[in-house]
Image 1 (cartoon, helix red, strand yellow):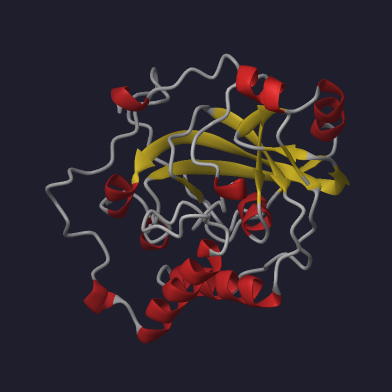
Image 2 (cartoon, rainbow, N blue to C red):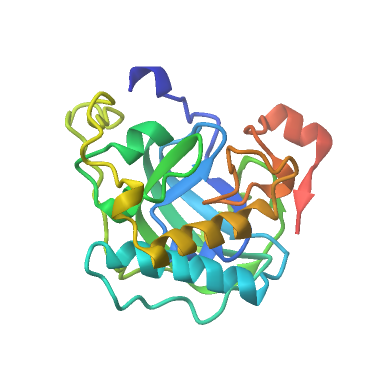
Length: 253
């Protein structure tokens, strides 16, 4: 995992703008993997902001069906989905504890099968400790990972409450002295991955529906499905540096 260590010193209070319903599903602890085509540039708390596009009912249904089916693999049949999916709002935060490749995640024997099935992108950000804002408040977003304004952070950090996730996951951290030392199982062993034969027709349909819902946000509509778990804003594929961001002032409602 040493090759995927990233410095987060440039981020004071990092935030990521995501489309709905993915943003709320992450903050509610239902979604545990944030999928991207680029590796996570931070570790620790990541604030989640919902973009301005109102999600279609079909998109919400597709993603909720997907999570119903994958959680059922772990015996979880009662999931409390968000009642609303607000847009242009800061929703809460998660802790990013590590980042692995899709191939590593789908073969990781120490995490539940439902988590492994969330791995549909090149890089999988591992998220724990979701917290939501009691009252999400309006703000504008940006591309890539960016810093919250100080006044927004100071207001937000006072309004957080814990979330009761349907199946909280504690990703293994083998070395307590090195919080980045995640060690998925050997890629030579695929015995723990979920084969196509093991997937029920409902699960196969749910995965296909989730993929279709995600690709609406991908400019290239490519096989990486960079939007599957996070819906990259405007096809953004790489983190935006502070210098570039300050010059361009790219913003997303």
